[in-house]
Image 1 (cartoon, rainbow, N blue to C red):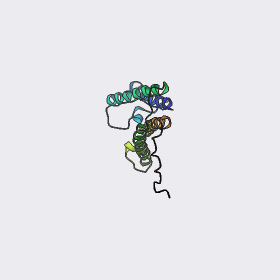
Image 2 (image 1 turned 45 degrees about the horizontal axis):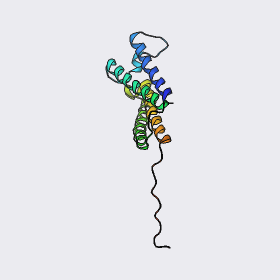
Image 3 (image 1 turned 180 degrees about the vertical axis):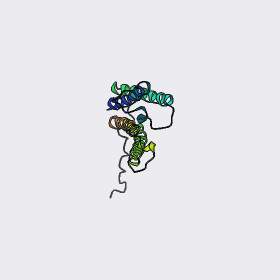
Image 4 (image 1 turned 120 degrees about the horizontal axis):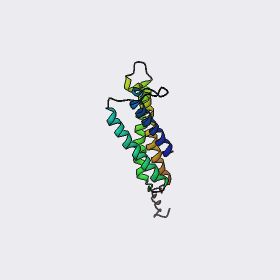
Amino acid sequence: MLWLLSLLFALRVLGQAVQFWTTVPWLPGFESFQGSGLPYWALLLAQILILSFMVQRSSRVQRGRVVPRRETGRVLMLLGGVYLCGSLGRIAIGLLPGAPRWFRAWIPGAFHVVLAGYVVTLAGYHFRLSHPAPQPSPRSNESGS
């Protein structure tokens, strides 16, 4: 799943890059990929860094080189859950009549869901493969009753 989400994000980055340097009629226009006022060079740099992290982490998980930690899973689940709710909220607001353009930019909105899904999936990896936290043993009843 990590690889699939990485591939989806890579296709988004590639699609926008293609539309920036040349125009392909079967892809949405360049502006459809742009969800912020960030200059494209800064957005592209950020996307390459994010994609590099995703590929590196996916590879490490696949090869068993990530030690699953329950606490890491908790933090990632919290961050990913907040990110996912915000991303879905952005899309929902964009469906309202008269919503500002930023909310109506569906390609960036959808890919924020992809990125949030990546974080939540990575959290699931940490939860699923980490050992459960030790449970305190029940207190023995010392009064004998």
